Length: 279
Ligand SMILES: *[C@@H]1O[C@H](CO)[C@@H](O)[C@H](O)[C@H]1NC(C)=O
Image (cartoon, rainbow, N blue to C red; front, side):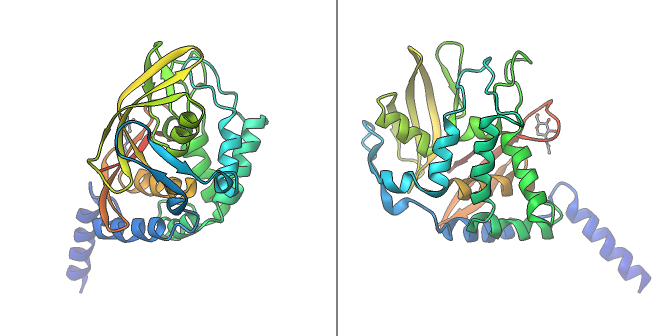
């Protein structure tokens, strides 16, 4: 009996080395549960096209002003796209209040309340919802510098959902469909290329962003269209914790997709540097 237990222990130790605590099958199951069950998805309220000229045909602006979408738009106003200029989103700021207001709704949403018990059962998240909220704040809203310490000019949220600009002409990050829509609507976003490599709903696009009198360009970026902020946050959090710095295989509406996340180097506590969905 003792020998058997030792073998079991050995097997479980070997299984936990380099493999994480979440199996590939569990990742497919939980990603599909949180994403396919996104009760606040706007897939039925967005139409986009693949002709490579204009990305969005129409988006329901009423829906986009409600719930987490409305709070996301309010929060977006606080971020300064340029790397090297502070965002001023620290504790006590209006930006921080807008983050709190978004988190109030995100933390009770279907995707988050689906992924939370799963992550907690794996020891990857605090078992209380308030503890998990602090962790999500740390992963996505903790400010850090991408300018060698010149300014607190970045966060996982800003990088992934809004994008950032630098060196007069470069865009970095920028994987959020709502940001792309709002900028295109306002005449500040133009598509250069559209690859239909990852359909439905994930486009690999090249585009220009007109900001502050400059034109910034990204040659290719993955943008997933139509899901809620909370579904993207839940999916990114899952992969950031289960498969950090790696391609995380997930199942989104029956399609095999990869979620790539990176930990930001030299920032403590641990926070997201990049996260996006690709093929
Ligand atoms: C992920 O990569 C970053 C940057 O290279 C590194 O600092 C971090 O330790 C890595 N994290 C894991 C969990 O491997």
